[in-house]
Length: 82
Image (cartoon, rainbow, N blue to C red; front, side, top):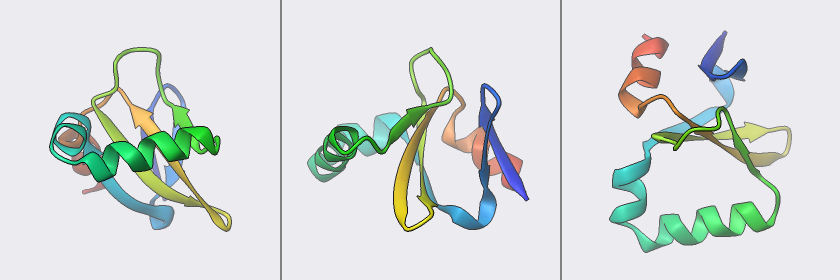
């Protein structure tokens, strides 16, 4: 099965490691900010929309990891999983 994260972007559910709220994850943790910055430098960041992201999804992509920013809230994405 797949999770639709917005803007015609789908991620296989079995590859999802975590769904994170953008505000809580980045405001409270410098480690998260460092990880996202490093992932961007490595080219592991993609976006499922042009608006300001409300959440991000960390998932496996082959042997690597990717981060997808989504305009949908983390609660909405978790609701789609159920």
